[in-house]
Length: 352
Ligand code: FES
Image (cartoon, rainbow, N blue to C red; front, side, top):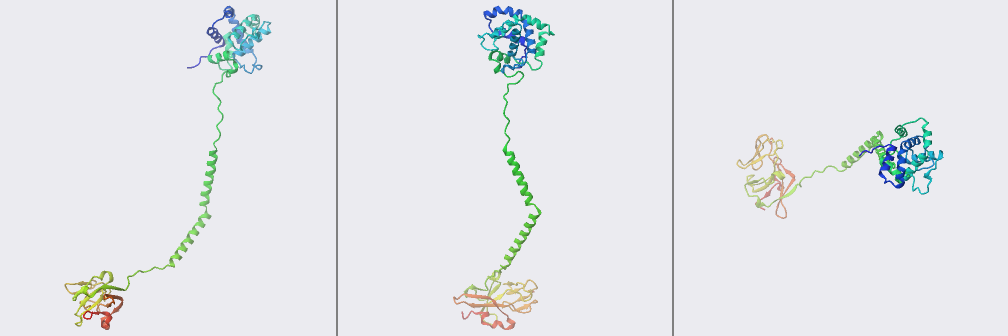
């Protein structure tokens, strides 16, 4: 709720109405009423003419204490006895003090009349002129000033808001700024041309060292051993061509008696003597047939059709000490060169 701004005369009227009238007040009331107009005028004039309350640090410009001081000063100047000097006065600014000042103002009514010779102004105008310099206090502020003394009242026109101390400057801001500067410097150093050049040179040198180390360890071709065991003689009955080792070792195991009437077991390399293709064993036709150019070979390995110029080759075979057949692919035997007569090129099944 907005505060109601009142003039000084209205405040005095409120004080008279709010405080129960004493016997002295009752006797003084008519006097005060009769003298209300000139006193109000005197109050207005004194409010304008009164000097700043230098003597009393508690008095504020335009406060009731100022008004009372001005009234007492006028009364003392005109020879009137100032009842304000009474030792029984409880405290400045009390209602009784104001009434005493009003009575004194009546005694010095002549002074008020003398003051009236000065350029007169209506009370309302005087009050307005007195209060034109500063905003009017509220009723509550005036009551506080009258009852509790001017020392406890805030200066007129000033708000009662407490003045807060200034907030301290955050030290984090300076720290963040320093960190940001350091980060920018680090990035600038990392992407400088000198650093980039040295980094590229170091990377190139590292690659050279790695390639040299790789050169010191050449590739190793892992091949199956050339000698391996293929089982016992009984695993290869007479009149059969076994393809068991064709895919893994590239050989056929042949048990036949068609080569010069001998019962032999030997190993034929599955390489066509034309251009090196791998022929297929055709069980129904009892021949090896090359799919590349159509060369054909008998079960003994002798070529009989197609472009193949010579028979298939045998590899070494023998009976190992443990009774197992052992093949050695590192040794080759060619029929056209008479090498099939070598005992290492076959196993005589009749002797085994
Ligand atoms: Fe076998 Fe040509 S490679 S017939």
